Length: 548
Image 1 (cartoon, one colour):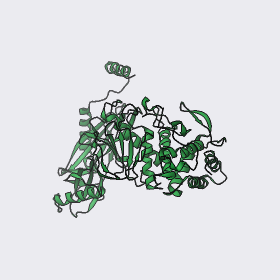
Image 2: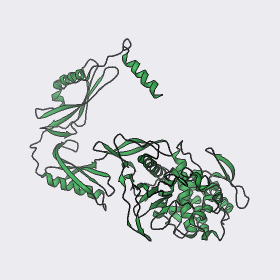
Image 3: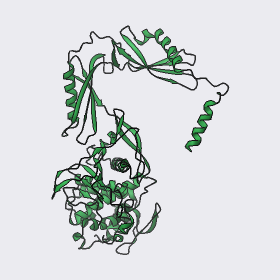
Image 4: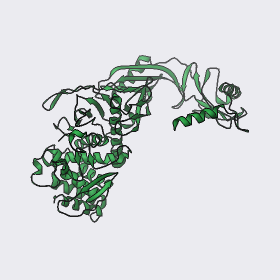
């Protein structure tokens, strides 16, 4: 989580199933208990429903120009039947023509649920607007939805339908426009166009977000939101701004000084059954699960806790590249591609750098770049790094993942024995890494930003947890103060609110430690009042790390 070049972004620096199945099998071969309803076969139900449908055709507005087709059948335990139908008009699908017949256990009519009650009668099913025009309109809307991106393999296929969902039934073109974005992920829009006037009626996403799961390297089995297309799934989450993850396949960016001439492409991850990874790093999808999950929980933290929609606050998702380079002991956020990149580690100093706190750390560099834009050198650079450590830690706590419980250590999951310590950084006592500063002095500005960050990290821990020894989620912490004082913490939630408001409202690119003290005091006053315990705790915690 270091930032080798400010333009490039932040880089991470070294500095009972069998029993259940058997029970089901036994139950299947036993006769039903006395008095239990015997469920009829689907064919029997559809025959009964067909008879009811013929009897009620006039009530449902069915005419000789219309046909129906059974889409689904549900039979309740008591024998009640529910038969769902789709409808066509002169062989054209009818949007809003679907309905459900509800039958009593004896097959008699109980009721009907209808998408629309509008009468279906059109003067013609010959369109005035030609198909190529409808296709062009849909393609234009898809391009507009991805403005600034170069879409590839774009196709738009119109077909005629009867639209009974938007006012009086009318002839319409339904056009499915699909393409691939710059990273190879599928994108799509469906556009409904009036076939008589060319007016747009409606538009919606073609690719639906669905629920899957993944076996991660560090966080156990985790839920994932993915995108389905053509019977396959892509590791892309439409519910979080289109965030997605791809495989860099050990390629690297080609950069000269602060300018990257080319960026290593990332091949989209796809899966046939929407169950991703094996929990073993040998499966390339496993670390992709960690990266996508880390992005998800970071997105959720900022949205649920701070009301921020995405890293830039604009609802746009970022993307991840995993398997970057060879034996690469780093991870970084890059503003220029609005993406995060993760190395696999060399296996001696580090493993794959895709843990929750690393993801939270990297994405938080993006938040900083879109708000205070703290200059990445001197004390402001230390505050930049500390901001990512603070929010990366709060993300880890917020995730409440049983396999990666929250603590105040950074990168503890990725560190291997060759590094000689249990984590990259220790926020309760930063000097435990041998280089970071616990207390402010006039020498702090000359330290690498990963070590000058120690002062703010120490402050944050004291503000949230207080001084002294304690065990948090099974991890021992000990935070002595620089002046021998005792600090009473006000909790992680208060720390997060105060630091976020200070970052987004009061800090600027040149903020140093005294200015950070003023910013957080003002934020605490705004949030809790000048006489509050939180305001007093902010002052006490800064004093405890020698900032006044």
